[in-house]
Length: 124
Image 1 (cartoon, rainbow, N blue to C red):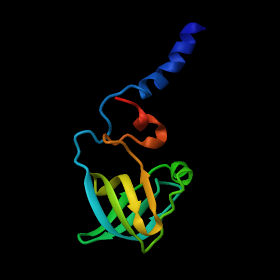
Image 2 (cartoon, rainbow, N blue to C red):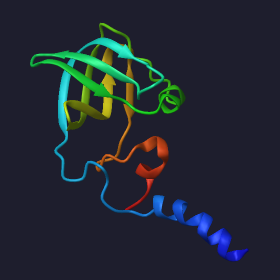
Image 3 (cartoon, rainbow, N blue to C red):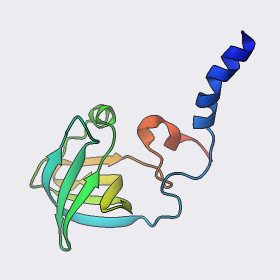
């Protein structure tokens, strides 16, 4: 019985271990632009389209539950400042500010670990 309990706990123990995050080694970039679309498709992670001086950026947000919990509801037409990591043509947001709506949210830690999973809150 003790062996079974230990085997069941191993996946949870490994999730809480510090180590390199998914974005370790990537540079954090800052982008500013106008929100042209908010995508809340149930099949994919919520995202924004941002019209910048360089073109349109697709910004990946995070868990819908986390966005609702933090009362983050950006509106099309407002300006957003996004800090994040470029991966395969997408900008994975670390933080977003929407000054017109007085919105601000932190989504990932400096290594790209999602804060909605609790991993980004760990002390290192």
